[in-house]
Image 1 (spheres, rainbow, N blue to C red):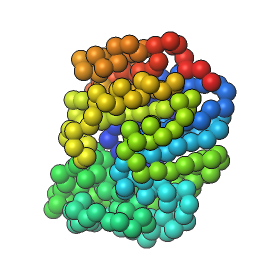
Image 2: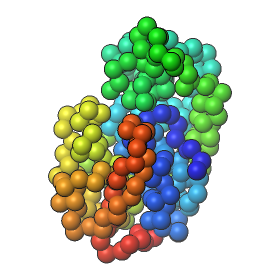
Image 3: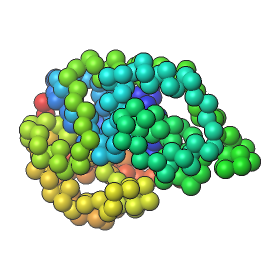
Image 4: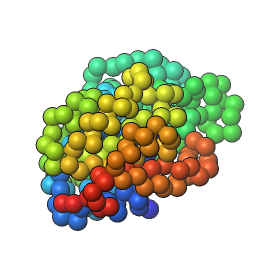
Amino acid sequence: MKDFSLMRYPGSKLKHMPFLRQYLPEQPHTYADVMAGSGAFSLSVLSSHKVSALYLNDIDFGIYSLWYMVKNFPDTLVHKVQKYTPRPEDFYTYKEETPTDIEKAAFQKLVLHQISYSGLGEAAGSPIGGRKQQGKYKVGCRWNADILSKKIHRAHSLLTSTRTYISNLDALALISSIPEDILVYADPPYVEQGKALYKYGDFPHTSFATSIQEMGSFLISYDDCPLVRSLYSKSNIVPVQVTSHLKHSKIQDVLITPSVNTHLQA
């Protein structure tokens, strides 16, 4: 399976794509990726499906900035990637900073996820190899400037192949502002593990479930737990088994679609 994600990212849905593709319409469609993260879903869809338009959104300013730079200024980002040499101290510096400049925020976000343990970014306690670099793997072991540069250019080509709108909104705000016939894909913070990774307070699982189920077409990936099954009891819940890169073992997630169809309609 081709890796279309731009960076290491906890919860990347690359391994879910073989399951997700089964529920995508064959005809040209408009998609909204309301919690874009690593971009695995959007880039995979752009590479293999007819996309009329794409809304690419993330509440994280660093993620938003990264996608903005990839779409509009890829060469600037590639230049910074090629010049950079990973240092453990950068992890601690970037983790504490909150840049408001798009170029700086984009680059720091990319670096943090590449040099942090398990790609956890700001949520990680240390860089790969630790502060003193005494571990088996060193801080730069996941940093390959040439591969990252190719991924940036490939992502740029995909994002500019259709109308792409990049935004920095709360997912609920985006859902309330787009037409109901758009296919919304969402990957909410998981109920069991999300609190450790989601930095914007407690995620509103209940209100989110209410809003997204009012859309005509939606596709959601979630952890399989009692709360999720309760909130989406009137929708179609499909269990899937994937390998967790955090637990290094098989876990059961769920894909959720409207109950009226097993496949989303164009």
